[in-house]
Length: 406
Image (cartoon, rainbow, N blue to C red; front, side):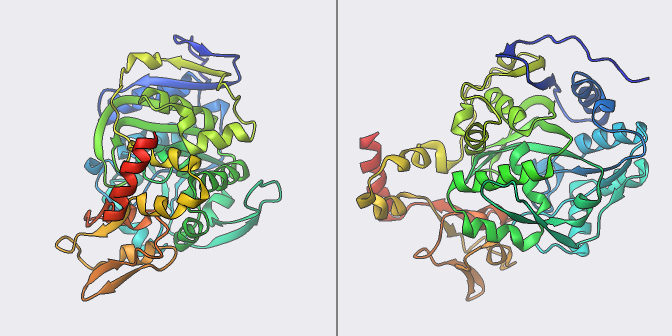
């Protein structure tokens, strides 16, 4: 029997049009996480409100790179397990699919390594879910897109009857926060993602592409792992930070608004939220979000660390700088610097760079800063944290000038 929606226990933000459930989950562990994920979905009306028995459902995690659960880079396996179990018990055929981060080879061997490292392989047989190894993709027209009119989409996403996105709450050097909206970028295969970074270095333009993608795919359900998030220089080199929450919604834009508020980031500072408002998907006042479960204020996270690209406000301040100061602002932006003693010459950064400005030199990676577009894909994909972000001498001078203007 389908469960009835549980009574809301939290405030509503304006008129009720988007429902977001916010449930406390103090730590990982299958039983605890399963209970929280189940309640989060029940608060939305139960899994039957989103999928029907017999459907082929694609579960889309965040696998930025082959990374162990304790690093908090990827969606935790206990959260993925819980979502898959709920779907299986409802009678769905479940397939787990992802194309890891920009610059990663989208191949069966790479997927196998990623599934094993993240801990997903361990429960796949137990639950009887399918791990995707089909690395083909299709060109999909997007005539209704406002910004991008065609996307390459991995084949299992095209064949699914429904898509459930299971994201990880983290900071992000380019878009300040990565959660539900950004997670769908993983449906674009391998090196295709790097090309978008090259074409769209501006955070707002990049976010316009992400909203176009979400509107094309229209995932059925969003579940967010915010049990332990990542702060600082996410999405891969930040620090784990306990939040203690599971979120769920049918709206990728609304769930990101609530997630931002939980960690104390003004939602309109997030480029993807700005674009959702621009498109009319959310009101300018961010009204119309009915939050069920815990109160947002009960988490009391007021010192969540922003990525270094936003911490001093450079992304926001740069919009007010005159054209005559653009060269100074380029110097002002943080640039990737290779720590040679840590570099293992794996080549991930070379493959990730959308403008081929990272090359191997004398057995170590080297960045050509004169043509670097500051997309930070190399920093994002380095698994050994051999790429840091620093300002040049001129950048430090520019920083002092800009900070005086602020």
